[in-house]
Image (cartoon, rainbow, N blue to C red; front, side, top):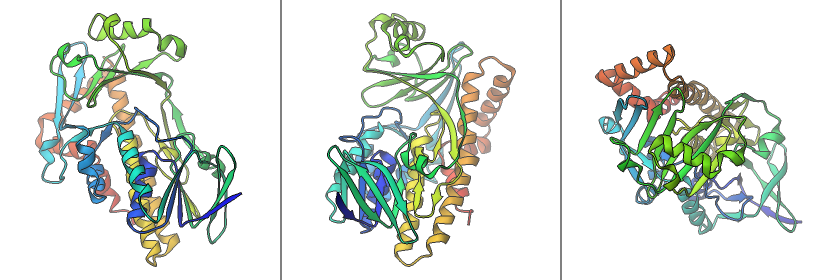
Length: 400
């Protein structure tokens, strides 16, 4: 059995795990980043970086490189599909409180790949692809982590294990913590296409949330593609949903002549609203999708995971500088668990309800509220601070 020693093991080389490992490596804290795949997965789900996330990446010296690969989207737009009415919000209005008054539209794998390459160049850090965490054992002094490779099992002795291994986290499962919440009844279907949709639908921004009683959707622009997210009936087979005929129907309804539209990806996934009962389990901590899941409306999932990573690694740096382990990890738990419950879960559920309720009385009330938010200066600023995630991080500072 191969054997290694480090201070921190991070499981999962997605954007959350790679940010955690890079932060630690920059602070001269020995770290091993392990990833079950052969390389960073080209995951197309997350593509929106919010202003405070960009500020965190700026502190790590990598924001500008990422910005150069993406699109700046200061305006996000809610649209009524049947009438074409739009309600705009412009993040440039809060330029007084953030260096980055826009959303960055850039696929998450660009960040993961950039950081994994940078981590591998650090003397005190390693990236091990084709290494899947299969188990661990912890005591008062540390954690024994066992990672499966194609040929063998590797044991890594560490002070701490960070589980950033996604929604199906093996680490969370071994911890046997409750993962409470619910799963949306419908499937979510995402198409990626280089079709110039902006020439077919007037008045599009890079970020568009389209409400409709029959088929709501989200239209997001990334540098080379449009990504179109639509709900799908749970009873319809995956084979049907990814078929040409179904694709043709969706784009027929959207822009017409769906048969002529070519897609680069067709992806189906289930969407959950779930939060682990505990994030901290002695010397094992779960973050990102391993700890909490939410629907994608608003782009909060990846961002909140990165916020987990930065908060936790700041606490670990304090621990290695002599801070009290239990007190600091307890503070991380309180800050991120409450933020997840009170902001991320509540806001994403609310966003979903607005799009999916169509012409119902509830939708009309939410639409009226949205228009009040847009027309009133104070309400609009408050809404922008919430949707940009700045407000949640300010409230987090109040948690001791």
